[in-house]
Length: 422
Image (cartoon, rainbow, N blue to C red; front, side, top):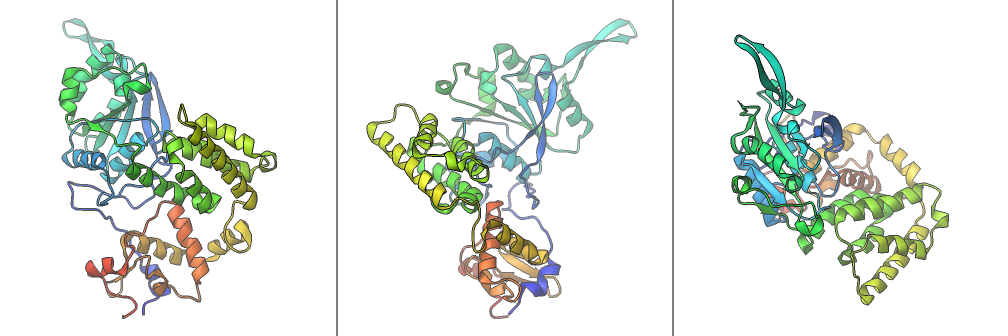
């Protein structure tokens, strides 16, 4: 039987993904990466991922129809437009998919842009026959022009909040992929917008733009499947910090709230900050109820308001019964110290086994199958006991690392070697 300690130093990184059109799946962490954005005449830096959704699995049978439609657009390198409710991670999804397909993202916020931010600014130049003028490109376009071998996704956010002048300036970019009358071959266009019912500034896309983006993608939100996907991510992010039962209590009452982003940022993050600060002693059920009420859907029924009060009491009890933001014996600090004492090669090997569904013995070239069901079999118990293994897995899952296979049958079907029989 192979042990992790036997092969931890032989780990290699490799790309994975289904056989689609040139998707480059990066193994490095996406969280915290920056992309260039353009806000009016000021170029800024902004996090690409608001963490409203879990990482995307191109092969998942749990993907919604709208997700599959979007993946198909990336496969075909075809311009697309997503319309959907705010707070459901549309922009996060775009950024994550662009990363998987090895495309750099340029984001232009059309609700804040002027025509010059798209079509350029006229500047005088001296020609042979006297004064002429040409258009100075916006900075994001200049960078794309300077890097013709880099593939980009040019992403226009809040597109249906653009005024008619902006819509006209978009035409050559979207329809012909031309900027300042120069044809580009290294980008395709993505765009997103919200429903008119959510924002008075929303207007209909012009006919040519709508035609270019057909079929439009109406993003699936509020369904059982979309909430489940969101909470898969929220459990990984918060179970270690707040406790699984805390997050589960919110999950069981999702019908009271509008979107996962507010749950993540304004409930889970808020109470985590309260716990690690000095505010826990000042909390009471009524304060929690008022906060939840302020985040709830409008026009709650009497029954739903009673649910809200019960949820506030549950949250209060959870916070009071588990005041420290730690997990396992000895508290958070000693648990963290224990994990840090584990050989980092072994932690890296566990991570690779979870992500790929196998570990590679470089010396022999053998791939030994790994699933949640058997990962304990390949652990050297002198190095990592069962409790520590669980802590390591919980930490990796909180960081967004998933098991590729839950059951041994899955890696057996893929043709990998059983480490327990080697």
